[in-house]
Image (cartoon, rainbow over all chains, first blue to last red; front, side):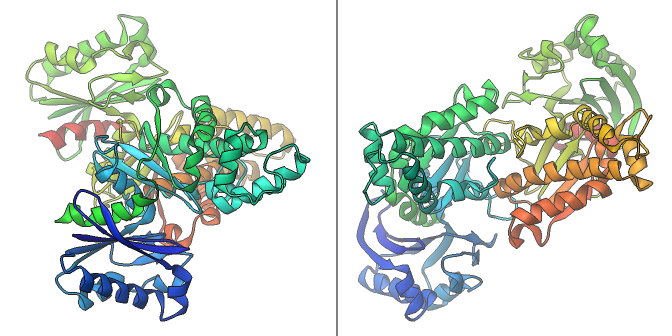
Length: 300
Length: 300
């Protein structure tokens, strides 16, 4: 029995995970609440204690963090959302509180890629890049069935790669930036859009796109355009032709992929694109939690 | 005793390499001459035969090709300069002609990175990217002391990554493009440059830069600017902070690196740049040949 914890800037999701990838006893917490009460690390430590008390079969705890990690996977080096975790000896603190339990940490987007690797329908694929399109934009790369973490441990930070407009991918297509882009475009459309008057979220834009709304479709073409641009460089650098898209925006998969492919085919020779396979990640919001649990399963 | 062969679009350089990395009995051939006489592969086959006859101690032949290779390293998939080699079963042909001898092929820029790894002063470094700045611009990545070839075998094609002006790195800084850039700039400078009237080569520009010529320095800043831009994405993707520069333009190292660093520091957080180490490759023109030989040494 494993405890998986998916840590995000908004919420922390915990769940007991079986070796078959079934999640149960999910508890969700407000990240800010943890930070502003007794502190994030102490809140995390206590909640892990609650789980261990309630489920004595827990042998290990895997955690995904939205930030850069030390190459020895003992601490977080850079994390905008929860600064108090940075440089805290998280694994050491937990080890000394709960001896006998294995603790492992990994970057959240890499956890999502691992989740698909361990439990998704794509687990047979040796090599793929998973891109998580959400508030943040992250990447996880599986090479020869193993997670690629690069030289210093924080590879595939695809959301922070520059695009042709001088902004990073995340600043173009991360959810808050995308909503801002939609709001700006809305003015140009002078009301000829189903988005008018609506509270714009990725889900709403996706629904309107499905009803044929031109602006909504343009918003996702914008995602595909910049995602495709960044993929040109990433594919040239790591040479994979399987790409999985996950995260909050990936629901609009069918509206994003054609432009993404077009951009990649424009700038890459056939070698890279003739077998290019872009698929929707299978595990949805559970990928990160399952991948975090998978860190432990792999070690047992 | 090993035969190393560095294949380029202009020339083919062969040499006998000792296990200590000493090169002897170098023979250089014109690539076009080989292509236009009995064909490239047959010329290569015969010359390898000459070496084996002259040096019966040769146990293996390592070759570097300027192109994309099959993941099993048996054939060339894409090579602009010598199309007749594409899809020819090179390794198979050589194996059946010379049984008992080991043949291995690798991409030329990856050979150069391996050469530095086996024989350069940087052989102690676990992780680095080597960028070859020449007619073409290539990359070779060493991760955990091993060559990283990516999912399908042709990773780190850094010369073909897009820059902010919409052109690839190679189209900005590859030697022929750089000379063209210099010629265009020369008109703007209206004669106030030491380059005026000279036959412009990287060496000449480098010499003029050393004499303080502003245009020459600007040309290398141009190299550093676009190299730095591409490095931002590559470093985000593979997370190394050791970069070696080799190839024909790397003689102007001191004029290229400041702008390259500036660009990287502009777009990367301290995590990536605070220990950034950019060094000049040590083996010069021999890196490719030595790396090709190293393919065999590693296998023996």
